[in-house]
Structure formats: structure tokens, C-alpha cells
Amino acid sequence: MRVTVEVDGDGLARVELCRGSGNAIDLAMARALLDAAGECETARARAVLLTARGPSFCVGGDLKEFAALPAERLAGHLTEVTDSLHGALRILAGLDAVLVVAVRGAVAGAGLGLVAAADVSLAATDASFTAAYTAVGYTPDAGVSWSLPRLVGPRRALDLLLTNRRVTAAEALRMGLVSRVVAPERLNEEAAQAAGVLARGATAAYGATRRLVGGALCAGLDEHLDAEARRLAAAAVSAEGREGVAAFLAGRRPDFPRPDFTRPDFAGPGSARPDDR
Image 1 (cartoon, rainbow, N blue to C red):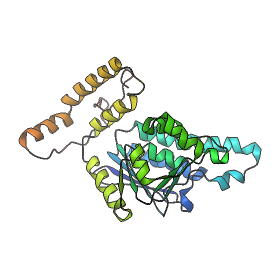
Image 2: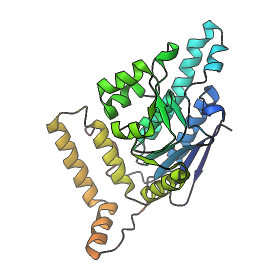
Image 3: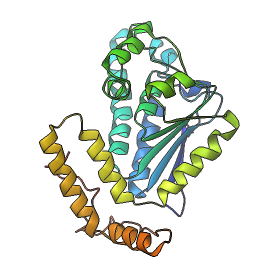
């Protein structure tokens, strides 16, 4: 068992890395992550909380597994690993569900990619981050060379990727790599609380917002303003939008309905459209 998944009644999917040994990613673990992401999609999760068992979150790829392979098999094996890992990231990025990641201890390589993929990331004060790829003659995977420049800027991303210097939780917060830093003994509780609130929130609106922010760096201002207008109009007439406004006007907490993804005509404000980034 390398990854566990539990989905509660609110639609919160708790995904835990539990391989041990720094939760290094071998082929079996990459496939388990892909399966876990698929379970989140099938369960129509409203939020996903990714955590890890043990003193470290994820130290990246399993170099011992890679080194044990003959040269003629290594490239194909790494392609299988990245295909599964990247498949998991694609599924999680395509959900309306918000991805919350909580990390402690060492984070390196593909572990850094999992953190960078989060919408909300909490780090314990004992967490540390390093790219690690070029230190062993490898190049980035897990979307690190795409997500890191967007979070911390191209210049700082290159510094991290080329020097492999270790970044503390406090520095990671300052540069925008993580959202919050908390005491180690508070990490699980605060992450679960944040994810639980999001699981009870406006899921489709969250999904639409994720896509707007994700597309912002790829679109011109005119194109992006048009996308914002379309998304807002769709959100305003949705069940979520109507409930949210009614609750605000009544001075009560909103009770957002769980989107009915099974309806063939479902097209909430979080739904992907070819003309929306």
C-alpha cells in the first residue's frame, strides 16, 4: 500500500502517501497516485487533501530503483513512471475540487511538483524544499519546470533548479511556494479544517476560478476579461450562485448544493469550455 484514499460524506477526499522511506516515487507509487486521482474523479470529490505519512512528505523519485535497472530499460521505465505521475496531475488539475497539500520534513524533486500543483499549501515549520534534479544529472518532471516559474518567477525558479539549494518553510512562504506555515503539531488539524471548509463550499465556482487563474498567464487581457465575464454569468444563474446571494442577503451561512455531475446536461461554471481558459 503506497497511497490511500478516503472520501467522506461532504465530498472531501483524503489522499495519503504512505510508502515510507521518504515516500520516494517508484513505478508502483506513481501508478498508485494515478489510481488515487482517478478515485477522486470518480467520487466527484469537492476537495482533495494530500498528506504524507512519516517524517518527510516526498523526496522525489526512487533513485535506488532507477539505478538498479540496466541502461537499456531505464528510459522506458522512467517514461512509465512519468506517464502515471503526470496522468495523476492532469486529473487533479481538471477537477473542480480544490487541492490542499500539507507537507512536513523533506520535499524534493517530484515532491516539489506535488506541492506546486496545490491550490492551497500548508507547510510545517520543519519542512524544507529542494529541486534536486540537476544534482544527479536529471531534469525536472511532475510539472516543476512549468509550475515553479509561475509561483516564484522565472529567475528564482532557475536559481532553485540549477543550484538545488535547500529552502526553509519560512523562505518558501516569502517566495510564494507555499500558502501558509504552521507549527508541526498543528499541521494536520489546520490542513483538515481548510480542506473541510472548501469541501462544503461552492465547488463549481472554485473550479471556474482555478481555470481562470491557471489561464491568466497564457491569455491576453481582452481574452481573459471575456472569459471572466462568461464564467461570472454562468455562476450567477447556477444553483450555487443563487444560494450564495440568498444566504448573504438573509445574513446566514450558505448551504451550497453538491453539484449533480451525473446529469448529462450539467455545465456548471467550473465546466471546461473550448473558448474558456
